[in-house]
Amino acid sequence: MKIYKAHILFTKEKDHFDVIENGYLAVADGCVVGIATDVSAFQAPEAEVIDFGDRLLIPAMNDIHVHAPQYRNLGIAMDLELLPWLANYTFPEETRYADPGYAERMYRRFIYDLWRHGTMRASVFATVHLDSTLRLMDLFREAGMGALVGKVNMNRNCPEALCETLAQAESACTALVQAYGGPDGLVRPIITPRFIPSCTPELLQLCGTLAQRHHLPVQSHLSENTDEIALVKQLEPESRNYGDAYHRYGLFGQTPTIMAHCVWTAGEELQLMQQNGVMVAHCPTSNFNVSSGMAPVRTFLDAGIPVGLASDISGGHDLSIFRVMVYAIQVSKMHYQRDHAKPFLSLSEAFWLATKSGGSVFGRVGSFEPGYEFDALVIDDADLNHDHYTLLHRLERFIYLGDDRHITHRFCRGQEIPAPHYE
Ligand code: GUN
Ligand code: FE
Image (cartoon, rainbow, N blue to C red; front, top):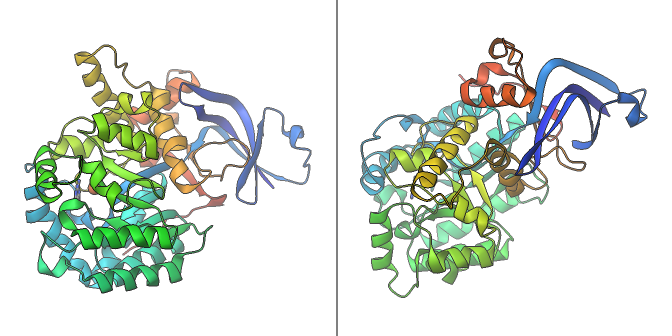
């Protein structure tokens, strides 16, 4: 057993923080045993106590939607909407991942940056290429960080070089399950049809079959941008709405499902998400950058639809989930200005979305309740705390003003995670 002493802050419930000043948190077998204000409560006199002094100890960040191969495009081409942005910048960059050497160089840098920003778990899109997707999974495993990794499925409306055959899609899935299919693995595959415009009905059907056959979760994009939604209507005239198009192929909650964006989700699509327990990956920076709109997060929360936060690199420009929390709060304030019946997100709600709610994608992750996997960050905010703020205001200042330089230790599943290597 190891015991960590610090000021401990986390969100068991979305409406308030649990704050334990000078608390002790005990960890055994990678999981939280409990929290106490007196170390003798653990009755473990032989346990090592690691004292972080005046620092903050918080759950690590979870990014539930991010494109690893778009890393090089970070912060460019932000003057296009979704469909031309994909065609002119995103797809050309993704074709380069046919080369596993290029993929490895870029993926190493990507994982280092996730680590730097305190994100210990991510649900990731790779590309259509099996070899470089396996490299990405190997690199996550090497780093000791948690990931759901999707080899992207796509076979229409894209460059020839990014189109796969149905046979390739099926054999790649088998290879990924063989390599990384264990149920408790920190790195696991996730079925990843890119979005309806990129996949023929036959490929969508195959994705649904594979998800059910191998008990794999699903991730994709939903109702992000108005031009995209119009295109989906054309391509899937028989579906009642965009979500229903996924549902018909077994890709909408038949196994655990994350849908990114849901900016324009309402009515029957919202009801279907609610019935099926489909999770929203809220990507406010991306929604601003490619001019998609503002997702109605309060409406999702009121409907009991699960929500987590996501960077959506490189639609989003910032890998920091702390910064994404700030944007999520700001978007919710714009909604509130239009409709006072939709209260804006509180700090504890934004924090809960990034930790316990988003973490649920990866198991018992994102809280410090007993039995949760110990994923944590130690924050040294001494240079931000020059006026004796309360612990909650210290955390708020770090979220709004802090950066990776304030993160002194990172833990995933109980292990301290050193900086991943990259050239
Ligand atoms: N829809 C389909 N592919 C993508 C992508 O790569 N990024 C975003 N933001 N939306 C998408
Ligand atoms: Fe995306």
